[in-house]
Image (cartoon, rainbow, N blue to C red; front, side, top):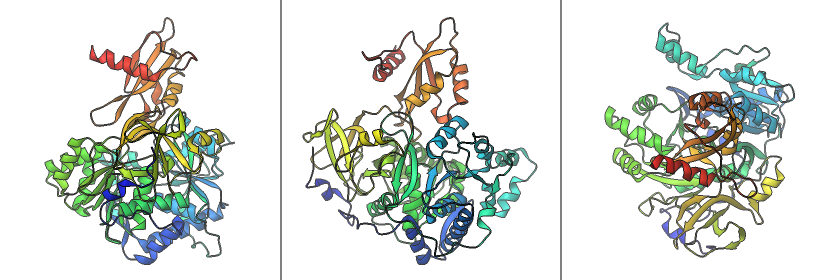
Length: 565
């Protein structure tokens, strides 16, 4: 199915354009415009501490000069392993100012997970949360960065908060331990060593639109995580598309809450680029915590929120109990998993504003579809294509063959936000990017005559839990390291909130005793907590195809049948 006449345009909210103007700015130029346009306006807020746009611009320029002194040049990879904090924002744009490439990482990853990613990108410098510095310092010499810069997150907090963390009471002590750790490894530099000098000179070349800005790790449509290549044009275009989608955003007046992690493509685009493109105040949270968020609402009411359904549900319930006013929140976008109608109702009753569901993937920077911000939205669908975005529905066995309206087929997407391929993975790039720039999403959808898309199934076997994509094969590989596990298959079991429970079926070696808790404990040593199977069942054998591939669909059905008995 091809829709060249774009019937969805009639469903756009008033003021949303069919096409965005082709971008002419790199992300660095975008930040500079924001600094010039809103010098005194707060750019960042962290536990009440405020950084103005002028201060942010100066800190970025000093950090860029600090990185230049470490030898970073255009094209170098610089790894960021940071929670949401002001230093993360500064580091992101400082790396880009040099024409270098940001590689984002989840700071909660285990050492094996991080090591695998460093084996892919070979970063020259790593800017890391101090709690992770020793992990990176222990990497083998062939992947250990030449320089490790440790960030103490508490340095960006207000003085009163830092003093409170030093109190000799159990709660303060546990909070301090959770937020900061002194690195033991020798040679680790402090963040202050990067930002204490002069600002970078104007003669240092700036990045071009088609230079690579970021490598974002993703499970893609199948297989182990790989790095998606995103240019300044890709990310700046998606920021422009996202801002255009919400036509009542007021330049220089919005307050965005960054409860999504900035290392995730969803948080990066909406909270790190889109927000700055409209001169918003970005209120940063190192992790989502209901009480911290409610404290921030009382101090600085938000106007825009991007999150996942469980966060919306938790906030709506908590504000009702606490009597906190959420009516400043005019617009909210939900993604990464299905948005239940009950959550929509609860949220809109609490705020009086709108919440709509969107759709995307890391390979599209990440947003490509959204429900209109207005009465023409259609709950249960993921909406219509963003401005300057085209879609097709094709036969997944023959993606050159378009299907009729209403038929189930694979969704293809094309637009300025579509990535350039996978870093050093030409075969997988060729499989994902078709001739003409069409991205295979791996999702089976239907599209109605008005262009609204409904996701009905996934060709890809990625599990979505807590808004994160989890590769089954990655979890299976970790389970197979257990000496008593002979075979393993991992699937996602649907939950009522729209996410999935990571569930494993394992075949034990002969004479081994099955102990789900022990296997789960073992997996925690190799996987981030959100990837560890919540449920593990023992089976005699796994269903396999004629060529020996595990049939995960049947594994899922067998587990569901067990539960139904």
